[in-house]
Image (cartoon, rainbow, N blue to C red; front, side):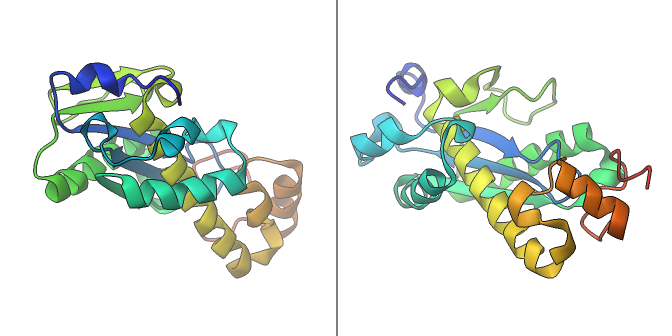
Length: 207
């Protein structure tokens, strides 16, 4: 990312944290959220790493895996949090998305000691505990920390879904990561839902 908007905030703030999530829409598996803070003015962060970080959806799986390792090494701090399918069914995906961000914030605050500003990819309205907080519709294309958080969240969730594929081999979770595909739908019709399916989501609830 050649132009990160953190540069504007670093003029007046020290610790900027970016939040993003993965897994809002799948029929199975957890909602996953991540938060990343980089050193102010990217001190100690290789220029090549900063340039390579982008919205996770625009990167290949191999690139995301490599960047995950580099982000974890050079970030000031980072955290990832999972909400299970059961929690999503109990709360609803909207509430779950807000609550996972709030819990993640407190985890990172405990690690950093203070947070001066939070930037988040668009998640709708929410009551966030941080007063200096802004939501951006294309945040993962504009803020380095949000893009890094999107990579951490995506890679963490994909790794978990690959492990679930070994536990529930009938559903091909390693291929579609729980999202709605023809293969996934056919497996649901043949085998019914497994423990990590979201019972409140169609077509799972219809089966």
